[in-house]
Amino acid sequence: MDKLVKTGLTISRHIAKATVFCLFLVVSAQASPDQWRRAGFSTDFSKSTVDLGTIFSGGPPKDGIPSIDDPRFERATDIDWLEDREPVIRLDVDGIVRAYPLQILIWHEIVNDRIGSVPVSVTYCPLCNSSIAFDRRLGGETLDFGTTGLLRNSDLVMYDRQSETWWQQFTGEGIVGTHAGRELNMLPSRVVSFADFRQQHPTADVLARPVPARRDYGRNPYVGYDSRSAPFPLFQGDLPENINPMARVVLVRDGARLHAATLEHIRNAGTVALTDETSLRWTGEQASILDASATGDGRAVGSVEAVRKAPEGEQALVHDVTFAFVVHAFHPDVPILGITRP
Image 1: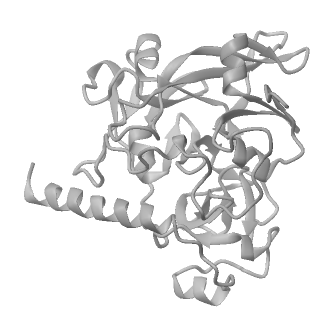
Image 2 (image 1 turned 90 degrees about the vertical axis):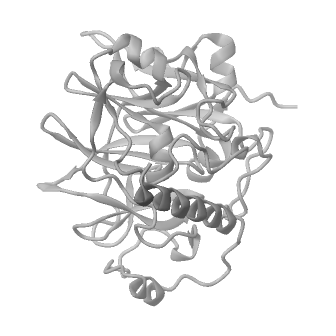
């Protein structure tokens, strides 16, 4: 490893330590558009759909968590740096399938890519364990996304580099700026083990580690996070009752309808019917990315798929495996199947 790469890894370790430390600090200062402008944002702060006081710094500055804007790929069968159990985001657009390893996204959070003719952003928020893919087209414009370094309900706040509108990753909604009130189109994706992906798609592209290494890939900077009894103190909302706030919950988006079920409930049932047409199915195991120090050593958690019956066959539905506190924060009125009430 050359001196440049060693220096980069050393810097990344310091950034990770500083970031995790900052996550334990509760930011009490009032929201300040002037301060955000001084930080480099040209966002139109006169337009907002949320209380600006609910947006907090997560530690890093604007683009301090660098998005991947020129992704490289390797063939699945050629990869020797991913463990079989490691989780990857599987995305299928117009019959083209790709995988995006969480061991990379845990450090970069956003990949701006193009699959066929469709510009996409593949995103991951470690604090919410939310893996969501978006179509980057809005109207007649293609957007490029970066990280603001800010959080709302512990969730990644993205920004587009065209208008500097701020976007809520978990909902795909523009919350501050020119496009406030508009929504990005979510694309169905699944988090699966690399072994399962490679077996089903041996010649498919898998996002490669950036070269030179910009972060300590293969290491989890949030060791033990999903074993906590509550999220980090930057989360200022109410916690759900009758369920561990850090329990994994699957949120399904079926058009305008939302459904939720605990991951454990799906594991026990095998298949959970949400409506006569839609269901959730258990499909196997993968390693938790947020457990052990090494990204392939995490304890086993589940993989699921959400589908709707259609005349032409089953259609994949947009869904996300997140935490109970996240579902409660953004969708408090959505009942969670599988909660055992006293």
